[in-house]
Image 1 (cartoon, rainbow, N blue to C red):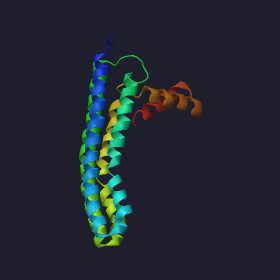
Image 2 (cartoon, rainbow, N blue to C red; image 1 turned 90 degrees about the vertical axis):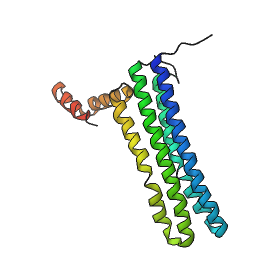
Image 3 (spheres, rainbow, N blue to C red; image 1 turned 180 degrees about the horizontal axis):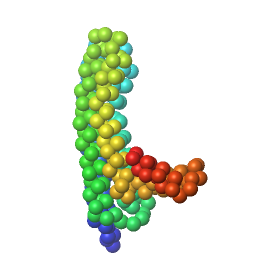
Image 4 (cartoon, rainbow, N blue to C red; image 1 turned 45 degrees about the horizontal axis):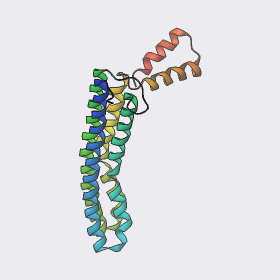
Length: 193
């Protein structure tokens, strides 16, 4: 017994797969690079184990971002929890969002792994480099953060964030109790998020 899935919903599933697949690939590569550097550091200095674990775990965040966005895409497409199918346009938006998160996670995960591996090597030479190593290792994370911002911007007007729109509208009405004209003016300013 086959289940019919709307084209837009199927496209959203592809977007979710791209998000988690590429972000996970970036995290895996980055963690492998950082762990490789950490193993060398621990071979030289047994006291480097804890720092090596910390630096090896840093690139994991990209996979977490990809996973969260994939879950959101699957929930809002109706694949998890049921619901109506998506339009083709909404499905294409989901592919764009998934690609943004996935590719940014791939690049920043690899970059973070390279920086983390180098940081571990630097700490073996100079113990006071730990804080600087964390900062340098965290810098490639910004690319993944930009992609989450893109997710919020692109889904804002595509129907994916209908729950956020209704929550904000309800909160404005409940908290401010403004008359219609003032509420509409405030609502227009809120759309600049």
